[in-house]
Image 1 (cartoon, helix red, strand yellow):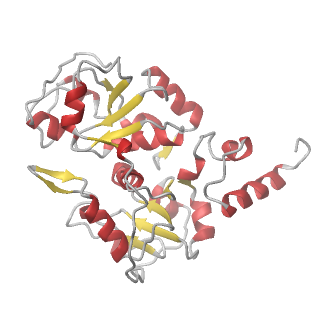
Image 2 (cartoon, rainbow, N blue to C red):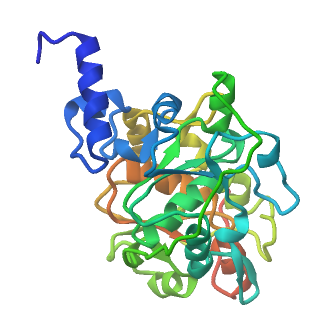
Image 3 (cartoon, rainbow, N blue to C red):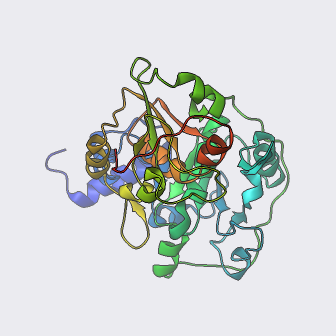
Length: 318
């Protein structure tokens, strides 16, 4: 192996990735994929270009986030399926941006996606949380093969890769979830019940909003109060991203950022934000790093601020 040329090494790595999505990450695979423990969760534009027509690969396009958006029709990756926000956000009580799992499952089936497909999530770099939220939702329903396109469609376009305005041809199929991974989901009333016990239960709440919102200097949208969840730590989600295309930083860089906030894989890390989007970008970084006990508080500060739960104000970042 020591005498093997870099070209041969790259060829072997590519073959290993193509043969099995669930291949155990080796040192070779990790080096070629940023050093992550779970490198298969992130795919490059080059990888996708070579797998565009694979029957078991389904690309979900997350360019259209707000209801009026119609970016998909102006150009998207060939064979990609338009995925509106309504598939992963809906009204639950008085909170309009909550995950409704039956809506997600219905969308997948209606668009020809099966539980055995490798789902590639492609969105705009500047709105990465809208893409990472889908990844988190897929993990909750036990989908085994899901990846984010690093750099999104912006990097794809910058590299002059093919685009089309033709919508993908799909045929409805039954989508049968593998099971419920409840550990990935945190509810507000559940988190409220843990207040005062974070240290004993090894719980760490990481708020990914901008520092001024966390400190209580600026009101978060749709919220009723200033401040943050008592005991939470602030880490803006952009801290783990790099470059113009908002690609994920290397494992070494993410580990450095996480350690600076005492975020470690032995803790039960709960990511939160305004509504449950920004937090999923940090959640994805944690999953890349092999964190098994990571979750997202859906509803997040919008729900917390409306429920009469206690809040904390802080003049400094934690």
